[in-house]
Image (cartoon, rainbow, N blue to C red; front, top):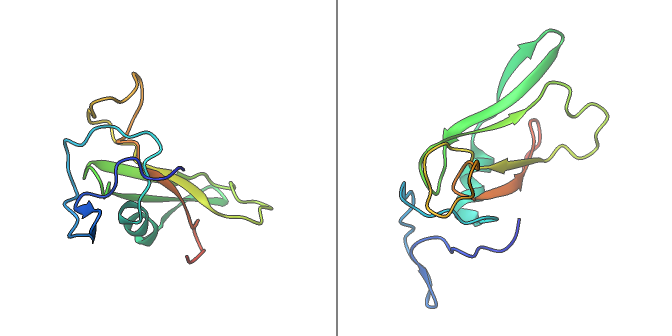
Length: 120
């Protein structure tokens, strides 16, 4: 993900102030990324679900930026033989965000986070 084109609310040239997120009416910002988004998504607990002999993992939480429901999902067996278990997490809410491309989901924020079983 790129640098934050829409800095965390409450920031200024004088430095960070108290964040004003979440904002359910925030516009879509493709590639948005900020520690104010990444930290709570990374810290949210992974849940697991057994599928046959495999286990899949997910995080269900409110997006730190827009507050709408989002899910980070890792399919059963996705990491078989993989050295890097990181996961791309993005807001995938279905609520409307001004400026979002047709057919898209989410408010545009996302990040690479530690996968199940990893610690940041």
